[in-house]
Length: 208
Image 1: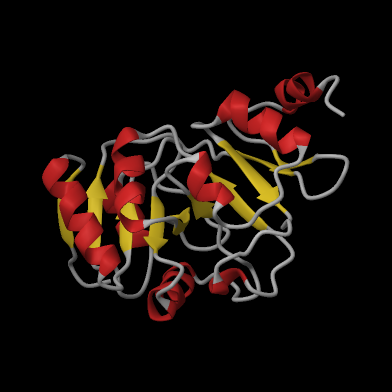
Image 2 (image 1 turned 90 degrees about the vertical axis):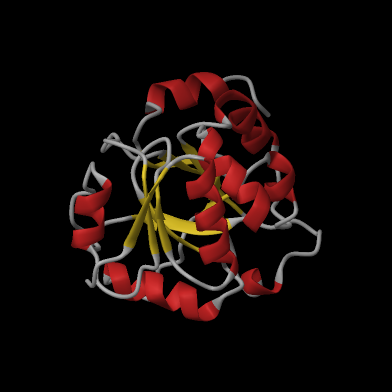
């Protein structure tokens, strides 16, 4: 990958990230779990760059990060009682929820989808960016199937393609978020990460 611009995770870095993403570019951002490669879902060219950079199969949808529950609700997802309970407990935080859709209108980029995986990160810097850009498609900044690097420079070197900006937030964890599918009546843990399966079960105990 050619040398890309690297900025710190500060106010100037946030402005730079918003400018790049809002103009249809791709950026590597720190999160509360791992480094992520991000693009706006309404910019097809940028989304394609994310798939190319990771070598991710195109049939696999990208997860979404949002600044708030209000941004998540605007996606038209169905907040079941279980989903609401989990969101109250771990948002912002390292829990991704795979939602189905309700009767509310959804954005065009979600047309025809049966579900979407969404998270509100516990990361003030990143949520500030999300408030400016709207929801972003963000997936771990590593080649598909490879370990996620802990440092921004290593994450950059692991990818291929056109990344316009890297925000260096220091050394991060290699523990991903936990993924729970709340589309059906019985929530299912599809990936155990920072939140244990036992903790999920306890939070859902007694939820109808």
